[in-house]
Length: 118
Image 1: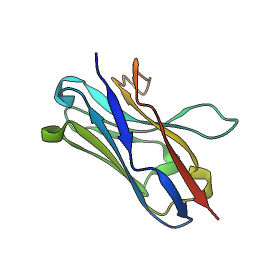
Image 2 (image 1 turned 60 degrees about the vertical axis):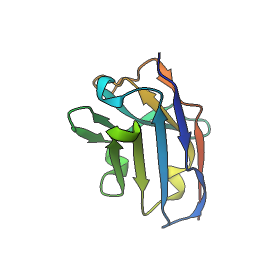
Image 3 (image 1 turned 180 degrees about the vertical axis):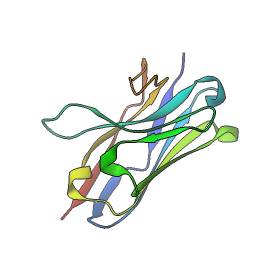
């Protein structure tokens, strides 16, 4: 069993930055891969980025070059640094584990709202 707690969402203007955090209840080194999904109003949930315990990283094409995912194993925490935010980045961001080949695992965080105004 893993509990995931997100923080860091908010309201920001286009071009601004936010950093999301996802704290896991146990060592993320043993979780294989953790990452972020997001869901915009009226749209399906989509993969944003994930990082494996070995340090491999994958990003959705829509966020490449703007978002950076990282992990701090000592704090059992995964971060998503979001720069150059666009209105289309608006949505609820969910932390998830364990991610396998981009498919979400059974553990979800509660979600954190990100709103980017134009």
